[in-house]
Amino acid sequence: MKTDHILVIRFSAMGDVAMTVPVVCALAHQYPHVRITVLSRPFARPFYENLAPNVGFMGADTKGEYHGIKGLNALYRRLTAKNFTAIADLHNVLRSDYLRMRFNLDRYRVAHLDKHRPERRQLTSANNKVLEPLPTAFENYAQVFEKLGYPIDMSQTYPLMPTAASLRQLPAEIGEKKPFQQWIGIAPFAAHRGKAYPIEKMEQVVATLIHNHPSCRIFLFGGGDKEKQLISGITERHANCVNVPSLLNGLTEELMLMSHLDVMVSMDSANMHMASLAGTTVVSVWGATHPYAGFLGWKQSMDNAVQLDMPCRPCSIFGNKKCLRGDHACMMTLDPQLIINKVEANL
Image (tube, rainbow, N blue to C red; front, top):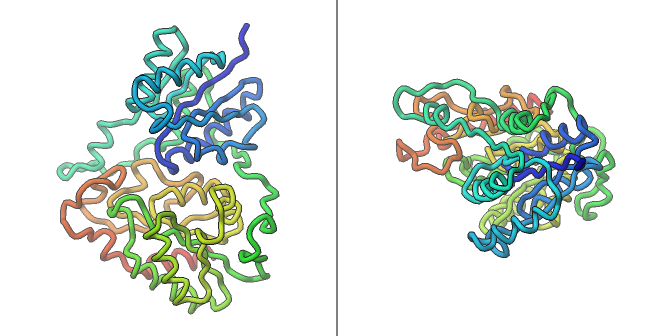
């Protein structure tokens, strides 16, 4: 008989991939005899390295080497050589649908993600909105494995990061944490405007926290060139601030640093999920999107979600839709003091 070997498919953006980690980790620990291979974009490798002895990773560049039908066929041939016994599609988009179809035709056991699209439409509807929590992404992922015959107890908690994530592995500029010194992370950016808090208001948060805690250090996280420029401006104006993207090299080092923070402030973005995997409390800021859509970080509390009660919220699941009001009031009118209060409550 073949050894059980599950292929887990999840491409997409960093935050979505990060949310698979607790579920795959629970699966690996509760079924130690099962081999698990995660297929994702190459950037995701650090999430799964050292996660569990029976978890492996395959990177696939679906915009390059495996682009289009020809590329997906080549990827499928590569996958079939791995002797999988079950396929878990945690993405359910065109690329994974095509691979799933090929596996179905070859009579593999296959299950895919239910995105609860009707409920999502009700949650984001401009009229007759139904503001009720949807199943979380973690519950949806776990359901896929249950369909394949591997029910998971998600109430159990497993380490998602190496316990010996030493600051000495990071650049010397990060330094060691002094006794009673607050380390605060702030990730002020998001992929879409509807999820991003105005940078001027976030700088007010920074200034107030420094005033309240003169010895604190604030670590600013960001990615693109424009974001790095904005971070550089803040660090020049505030001596307590550290420009993280200028010091750290890659996802692994960022996760290490996040594991040493007292609290992280983040939008509904990948940094919320990364900090959650590192076991750090996150004060999350929500605009066009809403925690009820199921994307709150792993083990995070709704009590730490900062948001305004507005009849138009949420207007989008992913924050990529045009603002119905045209003024992004859900973010523009959100008082910085609301974020500061949540941070202070967690320090």
